[in-house]
Image (cartoon, rainbow, N blue to C red; front, side, top):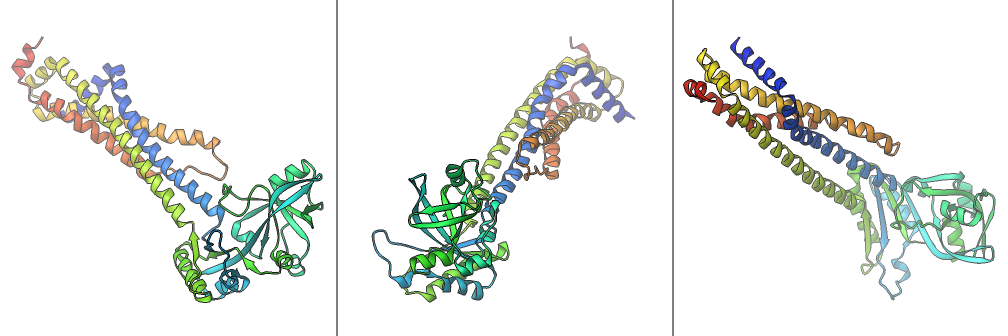
Length: 399
């Protein structure tokens, strides 16, 4: 009964000073909202980065010959179609392979030439690189087998050459070569020049570029691992395979997206830690504010404390009353802050890309509430202890 009375008095005291209670809780509101938002932003950014990297090519591994500048490489150093076939048949965990060969050329447009890259691609290239066909179609098996003089062009090149006109079915001249355009494509996500595809690129069947050059040299071999956990093993085995098939002096580099993903995780973690530290500083400041206000409250209510003790209230009941006030200040602020932290992502969701969803962490909500309440109780202990230790006679004399 006495404990219920202490709780009732604590609630009445806060209701009598609503503005003071609200201002005191602002720091807790900001701190708890920050914790929820920091975790939400960290999860969202991680999810977005992973989706962007996976869109470049799921479980992608690619191999290239390390070339020495200003020095011709022996022909037996070069990667070939046979290397690509061996990767697919002998390396465990490889689901798909593809190869490319690129030649810098020029596109003839209205009697003017523009630099462009002619890229020969093998089967499986579209599925590995996730190219999106905007108009027309991709190469079929017949185009590859019969060396059809067909090509696909990037969206940027199509706009610069044909404007609003549909380029599918039109002829495209590159140097002395003429191709029929069967499609317009783009990369699923921009790679900002990190891939062989540039703004003005033209892709053709690899069999056709092999016919023109008389060589079956491949610049890059792409391999798609069957599962993310297979990527390191596939990377290692491809490098061993290439070294076993070529002279020992030849050097090859086999890359994956793991390093980029690891760097993204490291940056995300560092940013998350920084923002969490800022959120805890906000909570610390709010805790100091709660202690300051509670000390003022204890001084203002000295006669009330003395009167309660005079009628039989025990020190622990006085302690409980003021601790509960601190709990209400911090807990109420935590609830409001958590609601704000959950509402802001919902509102921002409308501005995000359609395929990106903002995950809400239940753990962050629990942590924000517990930390905020603990802060209030911790900093409210000293004023509550001071109130509980007051002498009744001295309290009643206080003016």
